[in-house]
Image 1 (tube, rainbow, N blue to C red):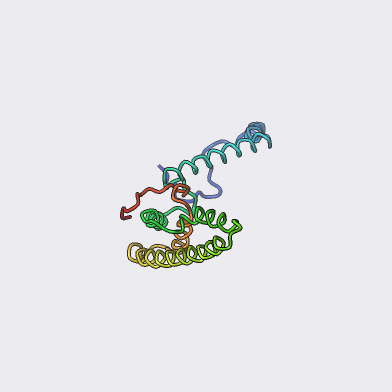
Image 2: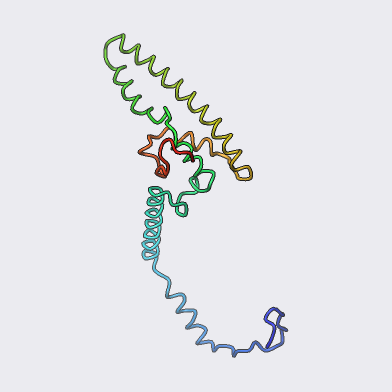
Length: 181
């Protein structure tokens, strides 16, 4: 038995006969002919991309870590999502409040327009305060729980998640409000 890790001497026989030219050419042709036409290759690539996007969409709905987009993967991001989803945030009600305030500001009554302007100020201040408190708490908790992991961008990721209405968040929330992540 020969040792396969040992290099072969250049003048030593290779252990099999050299193929005839016709056999080598036919083998090359069969490999070249098995490739698809440009249209077939593009169609197959589209189908593969569609299947991958479908897997990713299902993962966003179920929280399956394997098929999530890169921005949502990892234990730090999962914890940031759970941290946000387990609490009530004023920012998630920004869009409904904005619609109400816009309607109030369009009414041609000066007092209602002043109230709408004051509501804008109150809503924005409350969202900023809530975001600052959430950011500090999350940053501290991440530093305690994941000291050796890359936490870069996790706080911004979580704060952007607070701006989305809970029902519309992707990946779908995996914790209930009030649960500890």
